[in-house]
Image (cartoon, rainbow, N blue to C red; front, side, top):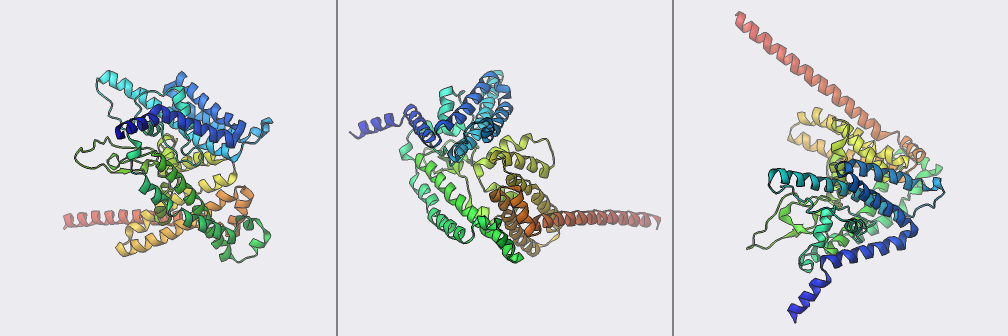
Length: 455
């Protein structure tokens, strides 16, 4: 009886059944929350499928252009006499944009590796590559899979395909990781509600707010960013728990999975040892490191991690610049556009490269000259300024309007912009002084050599 029950259960959760059920549930959620606005996401999917079918070689660039242009249309639909999409439709559209661009890249890689296999008569060494080109049904199933359809995290088509093909999903260790991700959600939620009630964002827009002293106005952005973090910590930890409970993104620890990307090495488990699993592929937030990492650039790494992977692999390598700060600026510009058309997004995201340039200048010119104790003190100051920089940039992200953002930043005298510019200036001056010292030292050594020869 136990054997028969296992067979029946395997049939119930077989890949085709699992795929169909996940698609049906996703469509129900989409239609129930978005209604006719579901057609926006469907148009995006069909357009991407058509691009891949017509020209897979250029599909990554074309799909990026197509999905981002459709995002523009989606956000300006009222200009064409169409109804404003719901916030739920916006959430689906954002995640679908990431999925379609990733899918086009995965399919291009599949065809390129297939060509190499034919010419070299060897199997491709690429880790996490597709084994076949997805059908239209497969693409639609991936696009509307109910897992993370609105909340994320982003995951590749290969992650989805691996999820469908899990041989014994009920045996995967999901309970403990799921509870681990959920245990802090009530705390984050309670802190969000409590602090938000004391420091409402709307108060920043009032004339009364400007009557408070300077330090109160600065402290307010600290509270706002705290509320912002608690909201997303609770939402993303809950979303990760949903993925874990479904078994999505579960791989052996030896596969060294990356958030968003999945396994990075081919892993063959030892049959004599128990396999340990993790869900790093769908990890979207590292709350501790977001708060306590030292650098601005590292803060981005631990926040919205699957989207950061997407930006790092599909946008950053194709930037038209070589300098790190400029490449980061271009990537942040694309990220701002993906988030929306509000000026606050651009003011915030484009401040990040300035902060990165400032911290790089100070690290090279100041930290490099310090001893262990001095470097430790430098790092604590660096961490404090990093948190204030994110407090400052968060205000543009939540205030949205350019006027509101500029009004707030001007009320605290653009303090982070000024600190960043001063740090860059100090770094350049100290760097110039260091070069001059090195040149003078070199000239002095040459003079000594000449003098010794003369003697």
